[in-house]
Image (cartoon, rainbow, N blue to C red; front, side):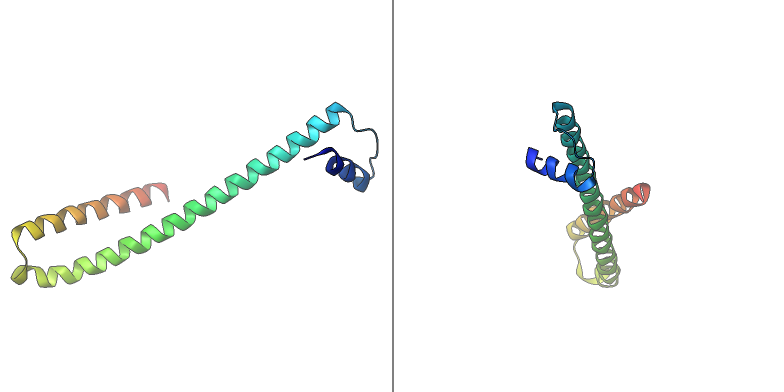
Length: 102
């Protein structure tokens, strides 16, 4: 925030006065607090969006996993079953993490 912006805000608010170093520091501190609050709000929104997308991914994996269980006994090899088991365990871990932070 530069001096002209600070002076304009002082004039608009009706407080007038002189733009002293203390007033300048106060205005800059207020601007910094506003920027910090905005950054925190953006982070929370991004975290919520990330959690939603991960939940959708987990739901999709669980659906595919259910279909694979129907197909698995007749058509998959032992190594494919082992890979699928690890993927299922990883998905389960993600669900636990999502539920612990929710």
